[in-house]
Length: 266
Image 1 (cartoon, rainbow, N blue to C red):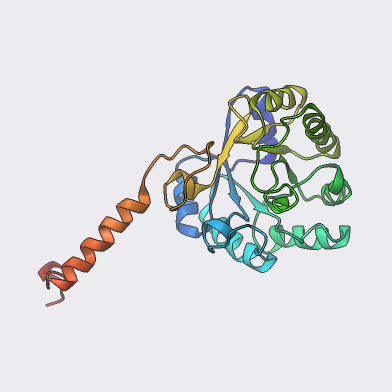
Image 2: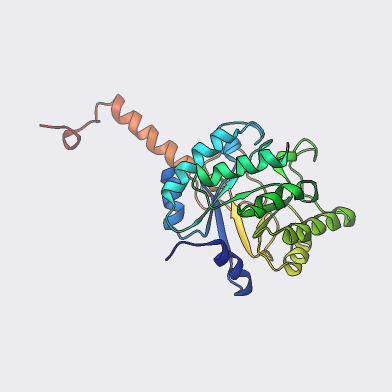
């Protein structure tokens, strides 16, 4: 398996081959995700809620994103690494968007960046693409706009809202993004968008008709304690397995069973 490129990701749509995408935040999990054959590894600003313990993704900084992207890039040999641009790293100005996006490639080792929004940030997206920084779009439910949206709610249920999301998708394609994440929108709308675009769509809570799917790794592995969103399929209860192992470790220490002869130098 060779290194997956942006050109390969775009080709997948024409070849009717599904695209797999997962988040990763450190070297070890990046290696595991890559070894499993995942096509795109997203260093998501979801690290704010999955790793840092925040209630939203808003507190995550550029320096923190670069720190995690460096680790992930060292662990991924085959997949396409995408850095998630955090809140206020691209909204302020075109100049700041270019400088911050450039850091993901120059310092972090990523091959592309992801940004949230459509018409409202199209000038930033065009500027990044014009200087050679590949961009993945993200529309529908936007975690960085959680307060404006009144919480983590499904978007595009009403026809007016659906048309806006569809128009944003077409605008992003025209601007030159290589793929678009569709988050928490009705299945019918995601099909309309997917069928109308020549670039891939990657769904999270957007149904089966997208060209690919993405999940937060810690949700998939069952590492987080809170109830999972409707769109998550939990493939493992790693939190319970880890807790059981750590409890056994403590019991062995308390009972004088660890370390034993096999763990001792003689």
